[in-house]
Length: 229
Image 1: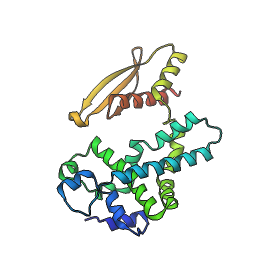
Image 2: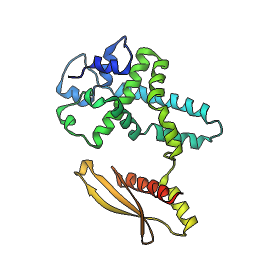
Image 3: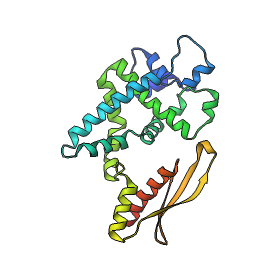
Image 4: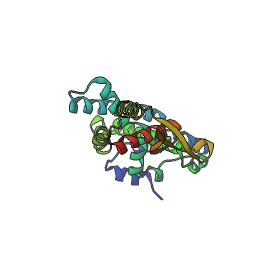
């Protein structure tokens, strides 16, 4: 069975107070089934880690993109630290093996788990900051977040894809795109939507997501790629 010390080794950091890392990996639901005076959940550490993450990424963007306006930098940062990015990093870290959940939460592997894992990544940053200081927290952020910046900018993941696709569609072919739901799969609390973006009678591309809005954005992004726009 994977232990907190195993995860510490994976991070390559030796905590002075390993209980901070234990707290970072403890979801509120776990405490409902495991009453103990010494246990805490990770929400305070998540709050702190979110602020450290925002500072580190803002500093990086400000220095590396001196010509980018404030609004664009804000969009870059939002795309870099959103729930999907955080959940992807949690997969890289193998957090599913280490996160401590109630039995009920442990059974839910869908959208709710993504949020829990994303929040745990921020809590780990908070724990690193408290135990090792800003430099150690920023090193973690540099390892797992900064390499994604190039992809965010190159693939224009920071941009509102629907707005961009509509603008290009009207400019190039004089048509306003429409979005049609192709399918909805899964239970109400964990649906996956597939949406097609259509120009006139022609389907340009499809996208999937955990909400209709997310699926539409992904369809628009796929449409931009398909059209070479």
